[in-house]
Image 1 (cartoon, rainbow, N blue to C red):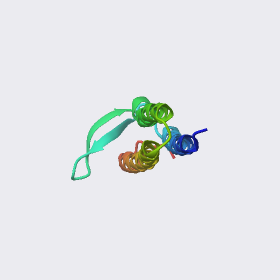
Image 2: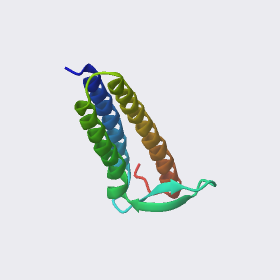
Image 3: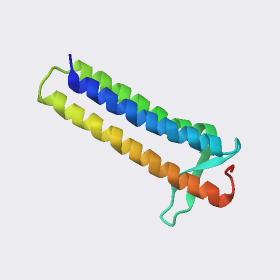
Image 4: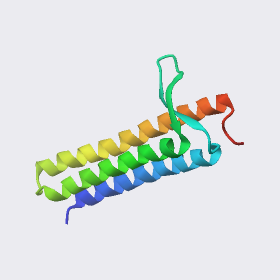
Length: 120
């Protein structure tokens, strides 16, 4: 049994649940026709936007696909130093993607609040 693989899966499950929970709460507060800022310029203004449906689903979906790929890779290598390195990559990416998603979501919600596009 590969304990590092199981622990890596657990970290990805926690990361994905945090991302999905944040997106779900944002979904509830946004109007259906809201266009969510996806990228911000250096001055803090949004440079491009997507519809709410695509914008809130795509980051967790990307993380899910990446996590499944890394999980499959961790199952295909034998025990040894490579497994430890891959576990480190999986653990780090799970945390970094979650932090990036939450930071982006916070900035997007602040921008939409400033524009008055959020429900109370």
